[in-house]
Length: 263
Figure 1 (cartoon, rainbow, N blue to C red):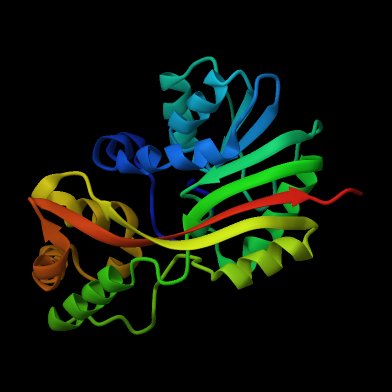
Figure 2: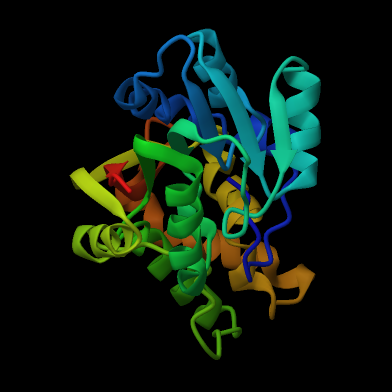
């Protein structure tokens, strides 16, 4: 999902689909957990370019895709013209009719920690009593090695960050479960797990990843020095995270299922 955040990331839907196709691919397991059924009303929070939203629709569910990026929604509408899609902020949306399920994949880590309570409140309000929330996103320790390499490369290039520009929310199981329960969502399962992720693009995988997802780390770096930072990052990671001409990112995911408590 591309919700509004304090991040500098500007979402390019064509680049997103062409160079980061692993994002919806890895969402297949979360769809299995959702188990959308014909006739159900489902909200996909952070639908991006709509690939998983369309798969939910194929189950026979009546799905609505929501994303804060107008560019992503525009591309999703081109790809899937029959889908119902809306541009809205994950921390301030509302719908008149309740949903049987709210789904989210690879999205919630982009929302500032201070806004996570508002997101949970919106999700709970959108669900009917007994409705379920199924989500997966970056959890505690996510991309720790990759980010450490970027920071070291910045310092070696002469551009150490004055403060940590990390734009992501990566909570522990306990932290996130407590937040959901505070907002009336009973957590029925939660798991934090390692998921090493093969990046698309072969030799360019790390460069593509930084160009799309880690631009906050380069805000203070002049454009002519970006290559030095990318190359320094690759140098630090090549021995452990480059295999068979593919870069591997040290992802850790938090997967959670919760149910809205009866009113």
